[in-house]
Picture 1: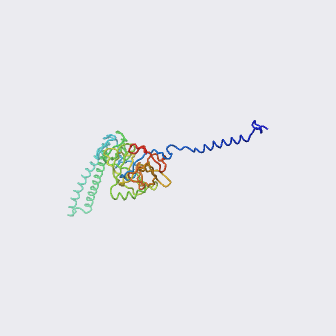
Picture 2: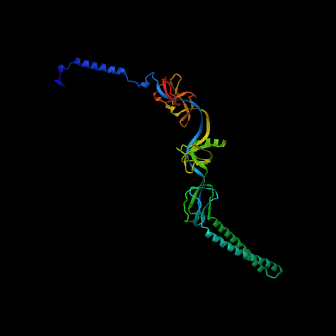
Picture 3: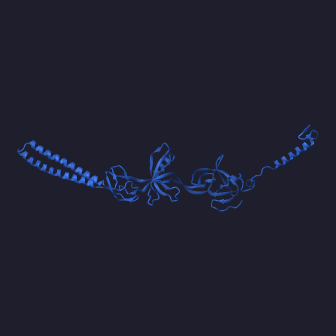
Length: 387
């Protein structure tokens, strides 16, 4: 019987054995070579790395937060009487001083009320003086028995009544003059005016609409919030002296503006777990403006002589945070380190690294434990030599 075109008589066991032996030889040769290692990881090859020196620095201990600027005081100017706006004496955005005339409301109706009140006062004062003289004359007559006591009492009561009327007239005149004074609206503070919200010729009602808002922009406040865990440290250092706060608008490239912490809120926000703080700034150069968002830095203290390395040198390992240190013989040693805190792009090392030691900041994945490294560049920009 044929099998795949071959008869049993032609299927030779000797040929099968030879083929199997040839296959085994090829497989054995392939296995003996093993996988190729990358050139940089072959034993004896130096891994190219970038390095930096551990340095001693004075590093500020500060809390970063985002805040916003608010005016020292804000006044919404409204009319205290009703009438027609006769004249606006300032321009939008103008800086005004306390006492400057801002708006005049037509004073003629109120002048008329004052004149009317003064006329009534003059009439009643004349009547009161007549009644007083009459009462004095009747006082002499009643003493001599020429008039009855009841007649005298009636005259004196009329004089006293007119005296009360005069007092009421004086109060009415004073009130009319006060209303007349409200026709001339003066600035209650020194500050920056905003948008004029009503134009000349319009009628206004008492305490109805805001005419303009004035903000006192010198000094200014910065409001920001920090996590509640810093509250004890802030209170302790605030009791020892004023704490400095620096703010700058994000992305502006402008130098920070320095101020002092002036306010710590009396309670922690239970919803966010933060405490509200406020700092005062003398912004004479107009770098800060009400409503502006800023980056705030609260300086608590300065740590002297801290060992600092670039944060990119710190790696995570099974034993904790670690750093590759380049030894004098050109080999790399892995060190377990303790990072106390991070400041900007640098890490403060509490233990594990000494100042002056060289740490690897790039190329850590190519280093074999105890293997040689080739410094291609250091943090200062100098080119290293191969080791």
